Amino acid sequence: MSEEMTIGEVARRAGMRTSALRYYESVGLLLPTRRTGGQRRYDADAFHQLMLIKFAQQIGFSLDEIRQLFGGFPAQTPPSQRWRALTPPKLAEIDLLISRAQQIKQMLETTLRCQCAALEDCAALCDPA
Image 1 (cartoon, one colour):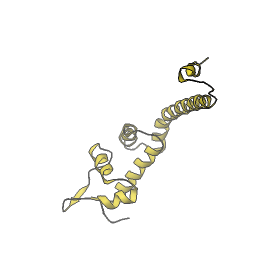
Image 2 (cartoon, one colour):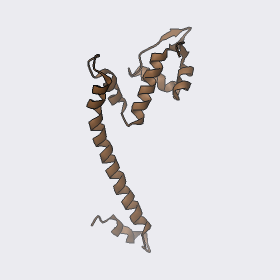
Image 3 (cartoon, rainbow, N blue to C red):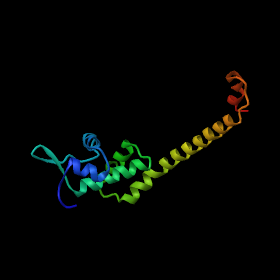
Image 4 (cartoon, helix red, strand yellow):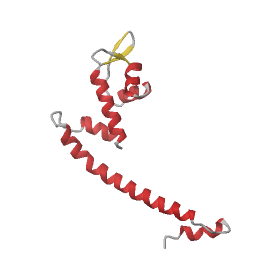
């Protein structure tokens, strides 16, 4: 992928919409690219940057966290140190999310055992005791 690609080509290859590329560029996650004949032209570095953005989003990182991953460290900071700094708070967040999801699952399972004659009788389901 050494050739330059149009926004449509790189978006297709990255599995993203062109609007996402424009947005990432506008918020500083993707460096502004050169234009030829009014069209954005992306190189392999931009594609790899997009794939890293996509990966970070898939593992739950927000755009602000991704921005910190890219620009919140001295330039010479290796990726391993960046991940080690940013991952523990994300893991704690995910642990809370899992805990909440398990609580919701238990509550939903409780509703499956409902024998109430009227919704008003279901107040007992709401009692955490």
